[in-house]
Every structure is written in C-alpha cells, then in structure tokens.
Image 1 (cartoon, rainbow, N blue to C red):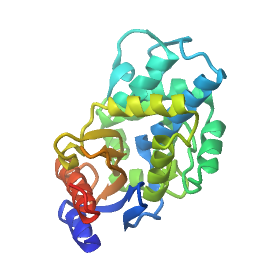
Image 2: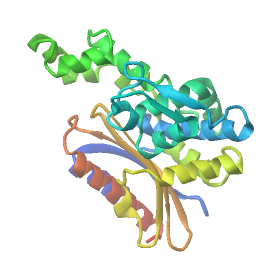
Image 3: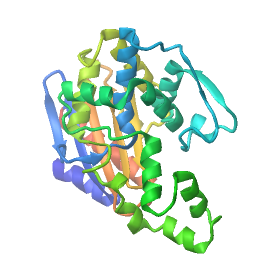
Length: 302
C-alpha cells in the first residue's frame, strides 16, 4: 500500500511524504513521515494556535484593530495582500483570513503580535521537535530576492515582469538559482515533517495543544478554509478542516483532519515536491487527495 501511494505521487510528477493517523487507536500510514520538508503555509496552523491560546489567556486583545497600509504589508496572492488601499481589521479577523485564505499580510500582522519564539516554544512543548518557524513571510521573500541580487521582493517582482530589462528578468526567473536559495532549503528555512503535523493536529483536536476554547477556535477556523484540495478524500456526510501550503512552485502541502460520518477522525499530512517547479499543480492536487483516500481505506475507513 505504501508503494501504491508512492506511485500515485510519482505518476503525478512529484515526490511525496504522507502521514495519516487514526487517534482512536493510533493506527497509521507512514510514507517518509520523518523527512524534513519546507512547511510553507501549513505553519500558519501553529501561528493560529498560538494566537488563540494567547487570546484565551488574556495575553492579547483579539478585538485590537490593526491597519495594514500599501507598501508596508507582506505581498501575496490573496486577500489583504492584494488590496489597493489601507485595510483595518481586528486581530481575530486577521487570524481568520490567515487560515481561511492563507493571507500573507494578515499572517505577518498576527505573527508580529504573538512572536516567533512563542510559536516555536509551543511546538517544542507539543513534541513537534522537527518543526521550526524561522522568520516571517515578508522576511523570507525579501531574503530570497536578496540572494538573487535584488534589494527586496517588490523589486524582484518588477524584474520578473520585465520592467527592469531582459538581463534582470533572466536573473530573476532562473529556476536553478531560485532553487538554491536559503529560503528553499528545508535545513535552513521554516520546516516540518508529516509526523509533526499530525502530532500537532491530534493535540488540537484532543484539546491538549492549548485551552479547550483556543483549540475549538482553531478547529472552527480551519474548517472554513476556502481551498479544498482534499475534498475528494472525504466520505459522503463527512467533514474536513484543513490548511494548504505552497511556496515558489517547490512545495504543495496540505494538512488537516477528516471526520467520517461515524465520528471517526483521521489526522493527516501530505507534503509534496514537484519534479519541475509550477508544473502539474492540478494533477498533484488530485494525487494528494487520492493518496489520503487510499491511506484511510487501508486503515479500514470509508
């Protein structure tokens, strides 16, 4: 069965890691579950957990309003990151945007309040010892731009669009150089393993990761994620709460919990690296769902 899952990934043009755990009896399916992987946006689950924990503890005010202005907020493909004008939202709504649509600007605003050290401390206490949040998204993408010879990410985007001339465009789109940067190196960038992610999810769903209220808030936010990569693996009448992650065409990740109509739960993490950046994303998404479906079926699920 593990060989079958490995072939599913290979046929889709990627290499994959997978861990599916049934908490009721700790039955599991493991494919490269200990391999260190670029986390990408699945790390936002750990940031969200820390936010809801601090809010419930009274360490921060979730209703505090934050204004994010153009030119001083983290860019990204969704939400506030794409807004033309200044946006004012409460911290709790920023956290919801981080988890529902993976908004980068919202993420870095929340992270600035809760702190990187606090996120990492909680992960370590939960036994997620291979998971490390290295830096904010803004710092990460600016670091990538600097390694490619550009002062910041905004300038890199202009170069990629051709605004700075053909030489700059070639330098900014050189996939070999991009792939060699620090922020795309799992040993040096924000990272995790499939097993760590299911460990984190189990702690959240069992109310062991933080207070009962904080865990419930995180579960609810994850259930509202717009991206539904794993929906084909969910049995009729079942539920899904998840978080997606992708980064510069080098990773395509998904973690979450599928709840069967019987109430049985499956904590899952599926992490993939395409053989070629940005190639076959729809096919890889289908393979991720199929791999999870096969794993759950092997555990006797539906």
